[in-house]
Image 1 (cartoon, rainbow, N blue to C red):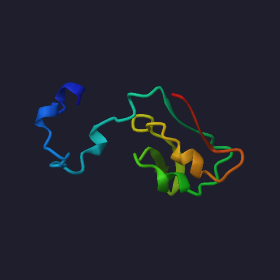
Image 2: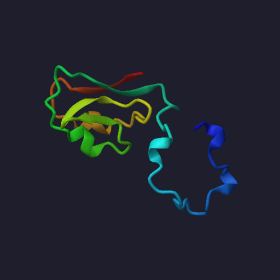
Image 3: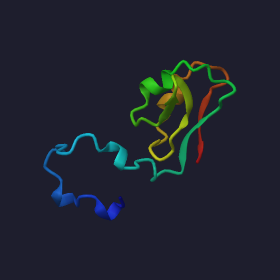
Amino acid sequence: MSVFDLKKWHEVPIGGVVEEPGNSREYKTGLWTAYAAIWNAETCTDCLQCWLVCPDESIVIKDGHMAGVDTDFCKACGLCVKQCPTEPKSLRLGEK
């Protein structure tokens, strides 16, 4: 899917009604930013607090453990960095 396949502004219902739920994985919302959360596996304790606060499902979990950050969806909002309890932080904002 490309940006040319998306609905035009005049085709979107007033009020932003979602007529096709469950399609968020089709839209790579992190592509517009050069920054993303960068994960440090050495300091990560797998508390998954970052996963709980991430609004974009950018935190990758495999077998119950943190496995990285999906930069296709990370918008670099910094919520995961702020929530991370480790010192030094296991997540930081940086260039992709």
